[in-house]
Length: 285
Image 1 (cartoon, rainbow, N blue to C red):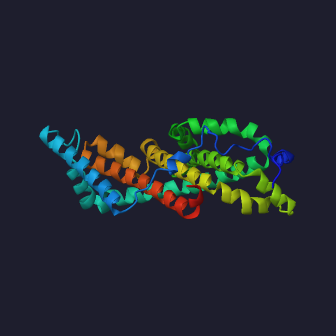
Image 2 (tube, rainbow, N blue to C red):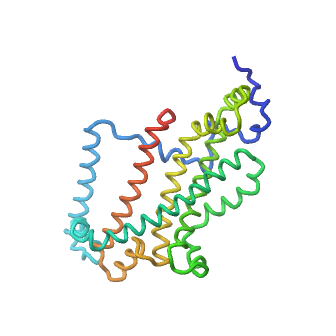
Image 3 (cartoon, helix red, strand yellow):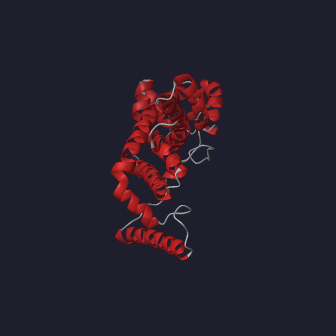
């Protein structure tokens, strides 16, 4: 049997062990724990509910004679999506996707590296945490004009803004996961002569994987919102720019189509990381 005071004999991890059951102000695991539909009947029920909601909206707009420049009917939005997708939406979508993934890769890589660093060197938390909190609470879209003055009107300002929005979320959740590792397992690994790299690869990373996935999920959603917002502020030919363009021309069916594309992209991000979590971290779900 393992002694109860074993964790107290590991000074490297005394200050940064977190109670797995404790609440954390930036622990967003609840985002990834929504119960998934089980069985064909539940899936059909969800689809039917969506059809009913869309149909009711269509009937209300028709009954109230609402002009499409005020609020377009769902059928008009669907018609625009199917008939104008390649002509109006494909190029902006590819532009937004390219910018988003570039910012996500850069920001997530830096965030994960910082999470490892503050886990190995707990004292760095004091210096890094205030800046991370500032980044989390500051809308990165507000930085676009400053970045454009320095870097021009290209893709770089938007990529940097997305990286700044993504990185902190990945870092916070990953660091939380690393610190939740059982201290007894760390002690056992060290007793067998495991190096810090081996401890990370064999113990810390597998235990932290659910939180890392949540960090990527939340960071990706933040990054998508920043990507669209930065295109609305900083130009480019992405989906955010199309929102401004269609609204200025009062082409509301096209405006609604862009919103549907953005929301579908966001749902796709959530679904992807939920699938990854179920496949590689199902033991913690």
